[in-house]
Image (cartoon, rainbow, N blue to C red):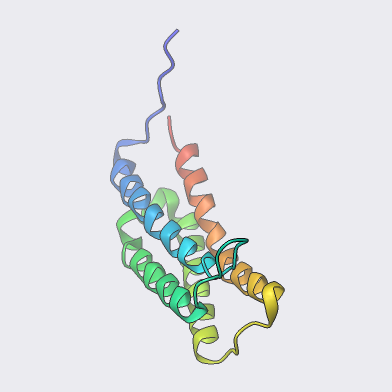
Length: 133
């Protein structure tokens, strides 16, 4: 028995490809931010530097969002756009107003707060899987 991967409806191949192209950019932005956390062998990178890279990556993702907007994925597109905007706004607030977090736990909490809104991108991937025939 040969298993075939179900295909997306024809009109969604382009939006799916555009969405998939943004995932590495998003993952690099998240990785940059988490590189502020010190490890057992290396100190964390300066928060100002990683926050800048995080924001730059999110802006790049934001610039590509319209390429995958489609009626079939509109709700998850809106959720992802909202999460992206929320993460960008929080990053800007931290960069402009907030003092550096106190201690390891403070840093981890702040990074968690910045990354949490981006979990909406997981819903996008799930929606595209649901739309496969």
